[in-house]
Image (cartoon, rainbow, N blue to C red; front, top):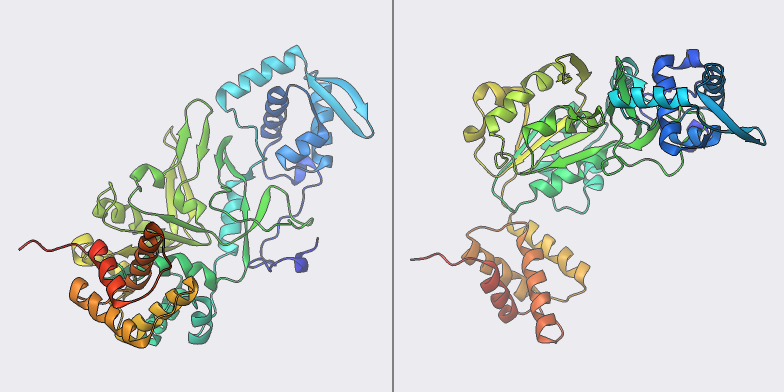
Length: 423
């Protein structure tokens, strides 16, 4: 597969790592490669160059040269040859060395890239969004958004700077934040792991990153061509998730959330409701948001400087003035108030909900639902149509009858949905 066969990568001309053909082409030390080789063979018991090629994501030529060197050092015991591939295990000397090296770091996965290479990649793949009102409306077409809101979102997305979405609950802040990734039309390269001075940081996360189904043959297999990432975290966010996490038993580091979100979007949902205080969290972001760099610390105190090419989206229904001081809010150039929906938007949302669920509803009943929501909920909210219609469906299923959208059924749904205010 060639580059044109896949979704165009960001800044392809600036950064496209090709498969290494020799040990000298790797940006990691030969000692680290040796450690990966023997640790993997130790773990597998008996291995082959073909097996190591798949597991370490290295070319056959690189592995064959490493194999010959380790064999000369009497670390490998060749068991046989099948075609052009060797089958081998570790000698007693090789097992002793593998055990010694595994005690320091047990990593035996895809070969890492250097921190310098990772930094170049992130800078080269900085997002450049080109949108207008029409293209933005098309990208967010499953949401009902006003022109005024689109015209605020557009410049914010072009800036690729932090975005603060705030306003009353239930009006689509989370839904909007989760869909912002749609404005990107390119792909980025993400390494399986990053190395600095022998320390391994795992980065590629199959839960958070979406690789293309087929990877280009012209790409260094230590990198994965992915859609731009979107990482979302809510009330479960704790300070430790924003720092390097070390597994004491393996000596392997896991990348923090913002590093996994590089070249994409990081959504901090329900901001202000985390265990970590809002001010502590915001203080953690001051330098990254201002200077586009982040500083991480290894367990022995060594500092790493990594790019911070992330669009951070804060979504909250709390008062911004209670969450952050003026100095921090000044660093967030884009602050958008998501207001309660008006009657026209409410009717459009209801219409889409009914169409999706295959339910008819006359105009009089639609007007009744809006009045009902104003009475029981004070204002119209974008979430009301879907929530109330779902309750109506569940009640119909419980009672063993076909659902009907009537004023009486909506009253019953509202009784279950809205809380009563104690006099």
